[in-house]
Length: 215
Image 1 (cartoon, rainbow, N blue to C red):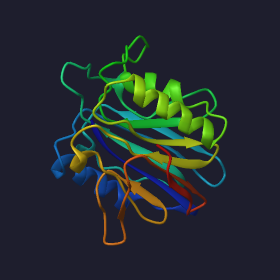
Image 2 (cartoon, rainbow, N blue to C red):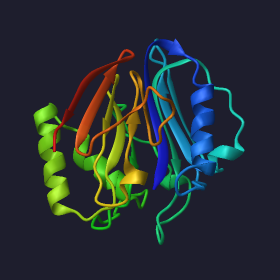
Image 3 (cartoon, one colour):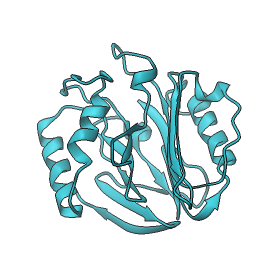
């Protein structure tokens, strides 16, 4: 389980206030605290990569970030009986720079990877899609074949931010919220709208370029 947000801007922008919002969510929000570490994957306009994981609770760290263009940040709360440690902290990143974080527990997946993570197995299944039809097909198959609480994800792939919302329980917790260039686990302002179950959103260069129910 987790709290997370993603952002996509036209140009590099300061995210410190957004980070404070996530700290507050993790400490005081739904099903808090989310205290089992946190991580960030982000890019600047000049394609510099910021990727780091912290084992401390997110609300215990005082960090000033550089200006960034696109990124995802994830604060973890481990599901019961699941391992807690540096390896399990999101986001996960592959050799092509695709980054992924997930909210939910996937009970039916084996965790036969170095991270001992159901979320990482989910990442491997969805990340190499060819187009939106292929992604929808992969997700429909995944939903049919697996047992889970939620499979919400944020993913950065080829400088686009993807967000997907789908859950089988606790809609108050698993619902996601979005504005013109930010996606979040909880509502951050009056301009934020609820993501529908089964909906995929894609952001690029500070704009929402796709939004539709694909499941």
